[in-house]
Length: 98
Image 1 (cartoon, helix red, strand yellow):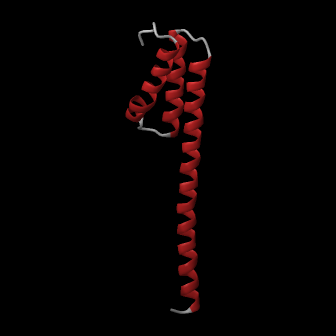
Image 2: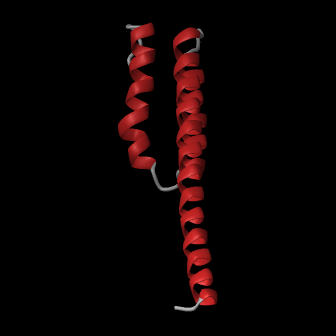
């Protein structure tokens, strides 16, 4: 392999690896944002005196933000985050039937 071909080969490989690296970094940033959004919602539910409508509205707004980051992950939200949020509400107000 002559120098020019070898040079092009290594530049192509480096470019592909950089693209993969950028994808990983981008995904990590999205996960950090997800964590922050969910933690903020949980904190607001636990610390503020919200009535049922306000709490459900906050959960729905959080759901929309999460699905904006990760489209098509409605089922995961319903399995992971909604029960967590409802548990926080129930722990704060045991008489609440949510």
